[in-house]
Image 1 (cartoon, one colour):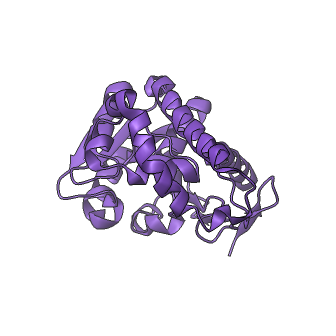
Image 2 (cartoon, rainbow, N blue to C red; image 1 turned 120 degrees about the vertical axis):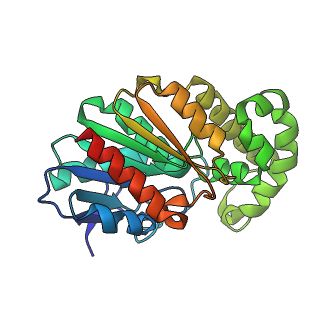
Length: 274
């Protein structure tokens, strides 16, 4: 299996399919997922396109660090690792990006804004504007009920202290095995968790995807309770050259659950661009 070492010396698994094709498509998976999530999309796209997919550090077949860094924000490392992988593979023509979920979709958005001249198109599936790029933020978001996720910024702006009071004990419980070797007092641990959540909310308030200028397809699921369709609608409002498709009877894992519908939308979108 192909691996590349990142700048920290960890082995990252990647797939480099049909490299002789003139058009490359990069696949970015979500938190706790892997490149294999896209097997239904790869099966269709590999016939005509060069496909690059990789497992982010700590995911799938890539190395899993033994020591857990509670506050390390993975998006910076994932963007750096993707840049290095594309350079290693010699991908130098404009390419498309397909990102799934809040992490894969956010990486796709951030990478597009960082390298606008390199991106031919962007496809965001079950994505949004929430930045859950480390373990604390991910656990916190997973603890939130659906009605808060639907109106995340409005709710947390007025109730974040109450929400944290209720969620921090559960975050600590979820991390109990990993916290055994961390030398922090209870107050220090609470403060670290609070800092991550408050910074997460500030980053969301400051986040502006209106700088994405490439053609963008946004696909949401009507039954997605992790990244509710309202997030897809909000992205559509903010990204100028975007098309919105909301799929009925589809949840957060729509690319696997409704693969025929999703694949049809992806192929039609790319064909129209060509």
